Image 1 (cartoon, helix red, strand yellow):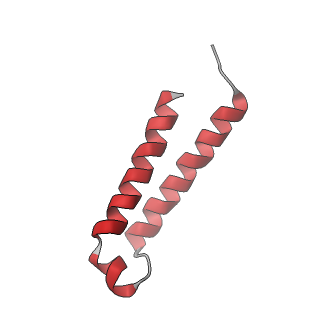
Image 2 (image 1 turned 30 degrees about the vertical axis):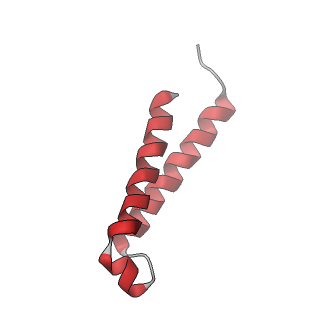
Length: 59
């Protein structure tokens, strides 16, 4: 499960860092295409995390 957690944290970090540093996102006050893609990846990782929790431990 740590790989799922790592993927979620990595996706969240990448999205948040992009939103803080992207000139286009700040200038347009709307997310750019890269921000939308990173948010999609974050949402997928979050969904995977929820599925892993529902499945329970597989030891």
